[in-house]
Length: 54
Image 1 (cartoon, rainbow, N blue to C red):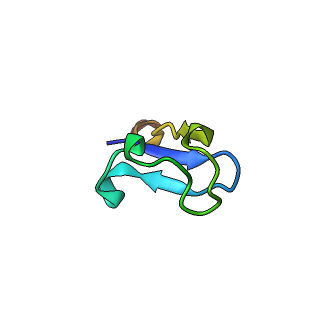
Image 2 (image 1 turned 90 degrees about the vertical axis):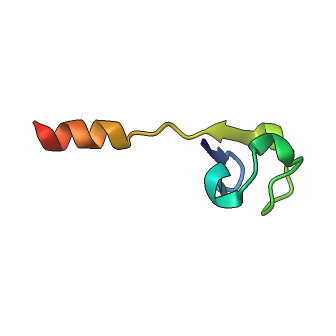
């Protein structure tokens, strides 16, 4: 599951929490912009874990 952010309003769409895929929506639930305004949020939690181990 992935996490996406709307580039217009900053809304976070977490597929796991929402229970559906980003492909299942047509517009941002907050600002109603088209779904192509969403960008994949990179998961940097693995980088944080590595930094804590060093």
